[in-house]
Length: 352
Image (cartoon, rainbow, N blue to C red; front, side, top):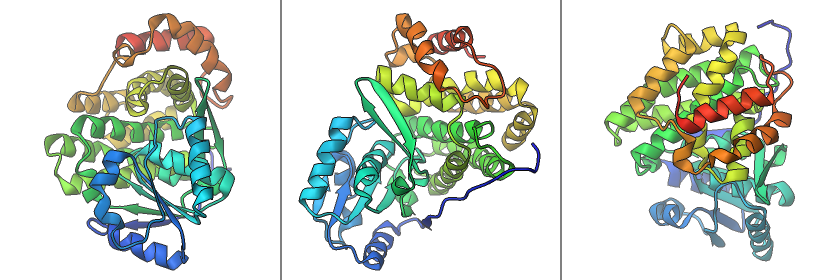
């Protein structure tokens, strides 16, 4: 990778501390002088995280959250925010929760405080996404970047092991895709490599002991590094595939990323030697795919899209939908035939 590049770093406040979410949130709300706060979380997360909001006054608790942010739910949430005169959004939960807050901020230009409980990484990016008529649209807007992110490993202890593994591998996908995203450069590659290193240590520790706070802390740190790299480098081939599959066929976000990742890595790595070397070194492995495969085996990661509802007969259509979205900067030429082959392997669980 040459040293002739332009790099943009997003401005954001990050508060990291186990057991400190409530106090950090109260301090941030006070610092911003917010008068009317909208708390966004799913019903299950709201019950689990009630103590986090004890020290602040919440004007509206909002729980109508759904994966891939359907446009009609975004419009409903915006109307509710307007009706309550909201001037600050607080999202607590995973990527769907953060995504809904971003959808509101996109049109209402309200600041967001994000409290992630998974490793989705959306809290550290200026990327938004919404789904309408089975098609997911994504975009970039500085207004959707959360102003503050509050990380607290205690809040992720309740994340089930299987979802923790899928969410962590989703974060790892951010790292890998950042190596050849349309704005890839040596700085975001360094963030991505550190994210891989941290997640490669954290996820097996969580698998062994889901209550391992140090493992949870390391996973949140790795997810943040991954998201910062991804926000800078932009969506590469992997994410374009997953966004289409999620929006068109309502596949679960984290599991889809987990399944697609080794196939994209095997497809691109031979044509991106610098990325191959960086990824392999971050895993402490001889090859990038070997490192990823060893981690996936340790975690018993999902392997087949057929297990999550993708109809085999939809594969040609999916390939046609994906092809125009693949960045021209991808290190290897992508054809409809190549995408179909990749998707058929991912559908069947035939690992590269």
